[in-house]
Amino acid sequence: MRASTVAELARRYGVAVPVLGGPFAGFREFADRGSAVRGLLREAGDFARVAEEFCVDQAADGVGYVEVTFTAASHGERVGDVEMPLAAVVEGLGRGCARTGLVVRVVLDHSRRRSVGRLAATVGLAERFGEWVVGVGVAGEERYPLAPFAGVLGRARELGLRMVHHAGEQCGAWSVAEAVRVGCADRVGHGLSVLEDVELVAEVRDRGVGLEVCPASNVELGLVGSVGVHPLPRLLEAGLVVSLNTDVPAMTGVSLSGEFALVRSELGFSDGELAGLARAGVESSFAPAVVKERLVGGIGAWLAG
Image (cartoon, one colour):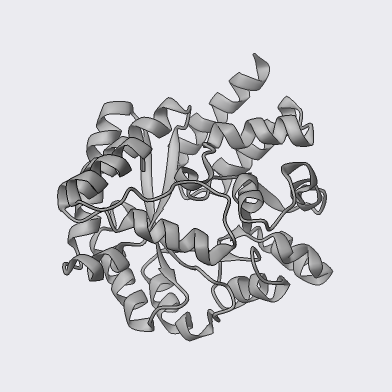
């Protein structure tokens, strides 16, 4: 969400403007601030506006394809209409894609702290909005186990949905193992602690599970001391599929191009290495083949130039 939109919605609804950006005392403060921002989305027009603005901002940042995470069922419970938030977001994304040429798909996530029933509702939404929704995942505080959701995730798999779970950010390698073995993850959000377990590294590599690495967010939350000491190079040296991503960029203040700039300046990555990260993002995405071909061609043209 744009800071200007956050401020405008806060004024409209007569509440204090939520604080965007850190520093954060930890994940809980990060999550609570995000909750205050999300609470400003109350009407269908709010959701649609934010979704359209998102498309415009992503296209302006040089992005060609997006898989954006949205916690639809949570919003639905909050506003008292299970379908409205996602329907409105889809409307806004449709307008934004038409304006920009961007291709967008949605991954619906679910907090580990919430009920199995809410995840079932999330999968139901994914089924009803299948043209737009490509995957589901379990996120939030990793100390809550993923195992209780295995049955619902299996149902999602049967529907053809892909699995994207957050793990290995706050907790150890066991959380990555759970995401891969119980959650059948196609990608893992973060996954940094996989390096603690040599056998798990081999398993994740052999399965081709992608890791969504978000350096700016890791530093902002105090999980990594600085981008300069981020384990990203070690993940690549281990032969893992690693892409650069943003994690709540309104809170970190870093866009996707900003993440690439940080990796170049703080870790010394070359053009070729940056292109490799970009290609990994395309290849581990759930984009249609024709979109992947176009994006990989664009990366190659950038590198050649």
